[in-house]
Length: 78
Length: 200
Image (cartoon, rainbow over all chains, first blue to last red; front, side, top):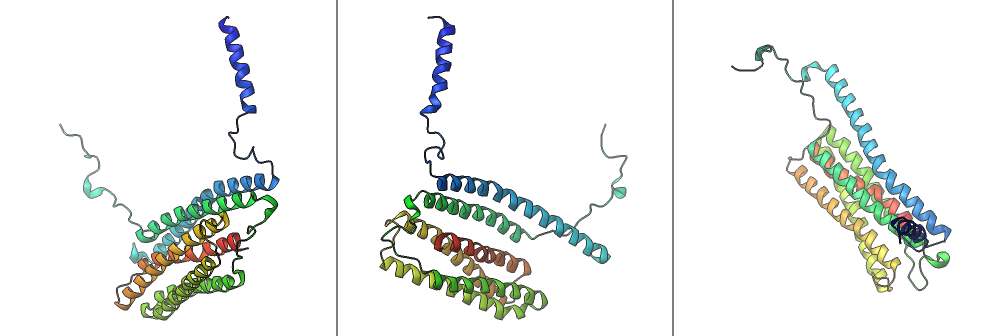
């Protein structure tokens, strides 16, 4: 058997593998509520840390502006 | 031969601008800690949501498991939220006159203690009715999520008591009060989310 035939057979074998692999936890439960829960929690856990970092950044920027405004209005502090 | 900063004599170098810190070290450390705790509770809530969605027929709580005291806990939630609001008043009172924070801080601690005490009594009643960690995933999630919050509430109450003690001794600083208050605000703000997810 030539190498080309073996390679083609290997590729075909790889092509049928996903039919039996339950790699994704969402795929094996067909219930809509379950899929929606996975989707919602994925979005929630993805956006939450980004939102917290963005919120902290905005708050620190506001604090920096407030501190600068205070030091400009009261030069003795500088 | 020396290579240095001959072109910029030290006496002509501009003084570095020293700006006041935007936030104290204590508050910054507490905020980082709170971020990690928010993600911890987010993970618990997510796991709870997914397990709940997998229950056949959406029967939640499962058949044969006791129902949680929704109305009583709503009142307890109110006590916790009020304690957070009173702590805000304590902060403003402290900024005006440190001793003025004594009563609102004590009131916030008492309301927090009422919350923790009621939660403890509720646990005892539910254990008596057969809801345990092993009785079902419902019981497991209830004790895991509410118990985790209770541990945080007790720790935050300890922080507030420590602050009250230092206030009594005249040694409490604004940074210390802000640090322990931030932790209590976290305990207060995360609870309504847990209440809605676990109790309703």
